[in-house]
Image (tube, rainbow, N blue to C red; front, side, top):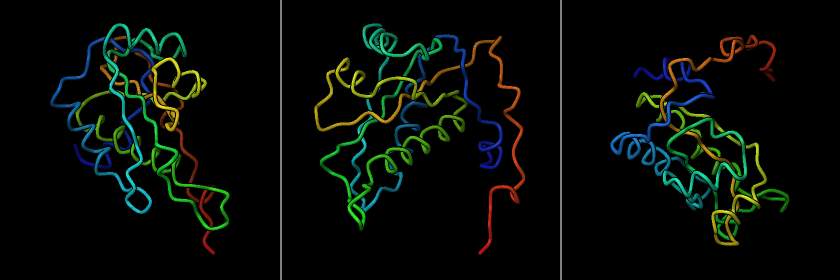
Length: 170
C-alpha cells in the first residue's frame, strides 16, 4: 500500500471478528518492529504475541479493550537496558517502545490488518498477570485482527487540525 494511504486510512479498530492474524502478515508486522530505531540501538523492546485462549483471557482480565481481537501484541521494554538522557530525568524506554509499536501499527495497516493501541490498563497488573520478568515494563497492548463487518470508525477519524494550529516555525 502507498505510505500516505497507510497513514490516512489506518484507524483504531474497536470491533474485531475474532480471527487471528495470518502468520505471514504477523511476521511482517513483527519485522517492522524489529527494524525500528532505538536510542543507541539498544533494542530494549520485548514483544509478546498473545493468541491462546488462556493468554487472551489474561488480557481480558486486565482490560475491557480487546474488542474481540484474535491476536494481541504486548509491547514492553527492559528497564535495565535503556539509555539515560542528559539531566538524568528521562530514559529511552517509553519512547523506543513507542517507536517500535508505531512501526508495527503502520505495518499492520500495510498488511490489511486492523489494530488498536490499548493503554487502558495498569501496566504492573498486566506484567504480573502475564508473568513477565520484573525488569520489564509494559507500555501498551496492540489489538490486531480484522474488523467486524459492522465495526464503526470513529466519526472524528478524519478531523485534523490545520498545521498552523500545531506547528510553530522559530
